Image (cartoon, rainbow, N blue to C red; front, side, top):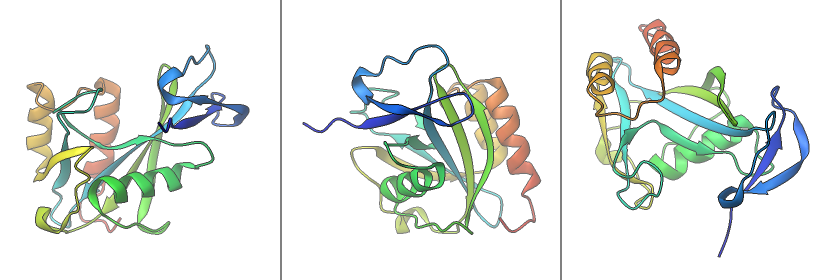
Length: 174
């Protein structure tokens, strides 16, 4: 069986020169691993969200952001590009994928990315083991889903900062 390895990072994202196995990760205080989220925004300011597979151990069946953990050796862009392609079949480049912020969580550094796309749900290639379905929603629909616990709660600071960045992209080419 294959177990994913994570690089162990310091609070600034620098390598500590060691790796841990994902399912056996025992990160000490001051040790972090890299996680990425990717928000897909359409030209009419809708947001692509996905419902996680019902077979996932973590957050099964929940509506959530696209993303996951970087594997050992990956930088943030590479991890974001890989997760976006694996989960939704959306290709990206360094020009199309824009990092908007980094949040320091309990034991992870979370990099959040935006990309513009007008693909229809039918044009996506969903990774069945990860994604049960995807749909486009307006920002107000997403905010309501968060408020009514129909979307995974990443925390108040997370949504305030992400929603502010999404609102600031209106009418702007990503």
